[in-house]
Length: 315
Image (tube, rainbow, N blue to C red; front, top):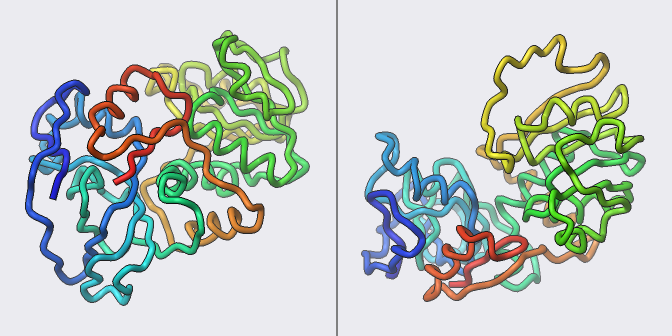
């Protein structure tokens, strides 16, 4: 089969498709014929830095998510040809991932799905919508009566969370730091140019999803109403930890701070996402689709930031 294989730091321009054996099925694992996968910032971090770490199995096929069909179910109880989605749980790091024509994946992260969406739309779902769903409902306890702030909304996760929030009837305030990107978040009830300070600029926010991260988190905490919840999920601001953060002083009285980590998907949540899609007749939002033979171009587009929204590769 064809696959992207990494064993060292690899720039986008150096991505190639290699010929490798199709994985041999074994108990507890499922061989999936990959139909589509999304690109994620996590894979960029792996290519450009994390590949050097001792805990990365090398050589490794990257890719933390995919959709496809069961090619060999082994002892999983799944059926040949069954439509499935898979994500996280060590995929593309502890064991080979989805940048390939076939992926051998642990049964615990292979989820049967029922959907009439095309493969390219399905390919945009697993990681992005699982993260959006967990951030909104597990962490923020989002309700139709809420006003949701999405800080850093012009990214795949921002578009997904806005879509879900609008579907249940929330009022949405979305931000971007670039005026030319305002049309991309026009679906929101209110759009704001974010210069790093929202406190005093917006009002009525009961729930906030911060995709910028530690760089502006203190300001997000003071921008919400008393009783509000802030969930930090993204790290778009390029700052990965808060220096000198004092929870007593920096979290206002009556405001709650949480975060979402997407490494533990469950069948219940995946089922809930696709039930929601079917109920609301939604299709997943994505920016651009590349054929697998053009995966290098897809990765270059990711590194250049040349696509607004999720990049999907169709195999």
